[in-house]
Image (cartoon, rainbow, N blue to C red; front, top):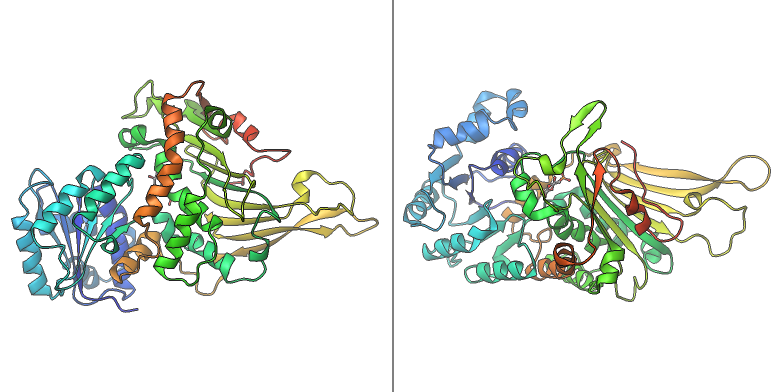
Length: 497
Ligand code: BG6
């Protein structure tokens, strides 16, 4: 695909995301020849900086690009930096945009970007509507000459109500088809591959339902704590930060029905239906039994002291915000009726891993000798990260007398593909938006359906009776009672480091 002439305008450009993710992604796209000759980036934010200072910050002196550009031809790097500009917005995002409008117009004429603009909002969501309004007032949302698109970062809302307000606010100035809600998990190859595993093979999909699947498990674990983001995280927590967005996106791809084709609208229509079929938990007993929250406490890993969550910078010392969340739920539709889903996400776990485990039912008649449960079921393990790949566990006969059955592995690693150069999530997603492909972006109704499921859990955790925030030490798989969430003899699969 060819990328058309365009300008990328980043709001909140002095922030971490621009230097850490966006500029490196644009650099890689530039290097990979994915960008047109007529392309510029304009950073805008409230810090006073010249073009040169901004270029130094995000390119020449960037900690995130340092390793890459140190091996590069200096002329090439300077040609890239010449495409980057900066405009100071003054002290407020809801201000007079005349200067910004003029700057965009001048750059557009000089660099022939064809009036085609992407506005990337890397600012707190409370500013989205004000920015959209000001762009509109400058005539910058109007598509009579050249397309206009807006990308917004998560968190997309704080609750169902605030998400709806954000959607309404943005839709006053941009049409839904111009709005791209980014979820970087959808930019991961392995997440997209869920669709291919299911719908481009004839061996999995016939089994992908309540008749053959016993339960589904998703684990998202990080070894880090909240790092320097305590202020943000304490108001958010694991459920808002990871579950409502990234993990429910993964759930929707596992749960959805086959789309009629791979167009953005058809795929997203099926995802919305999937999210709407998650059974919303309303009574306190179910919420008590099916949800667990936890928080890491001060501990030691390999002789090194690790701060407890409540001692982290920016965190309330009495905080009840969860850094661990485990949720059991059901999906009320024909395919999934009564099949439990278990999803957990946490900081300060023993290893960084995201994986989906599809547990198949054991054969309905046991021909061979009793085996322990972990050895009985077939599992399909989809490794989202790291070691991206797919592992199928199945039974084989142990050589010798009798019929002793043992688990064997069929293991595929992405790294074994001859073209295994996996594009980083931001690279892929930015390129899609530049080419007008919204398949991997969340639509308004998807985001709202996800919030509708999460809202009652959050309300219960904030206001319900008998809600506990269980402590866990850094480096363990969360509170011990999280194993009790899983029905029967099963436990979580805790992948090794
Ligand atoms: C972000 C969350 O969206 O995703 C972070 O805000 C989290 O808290 C991060 O660390 C995890 O992303 P990844 O790609 O490293 O799994």
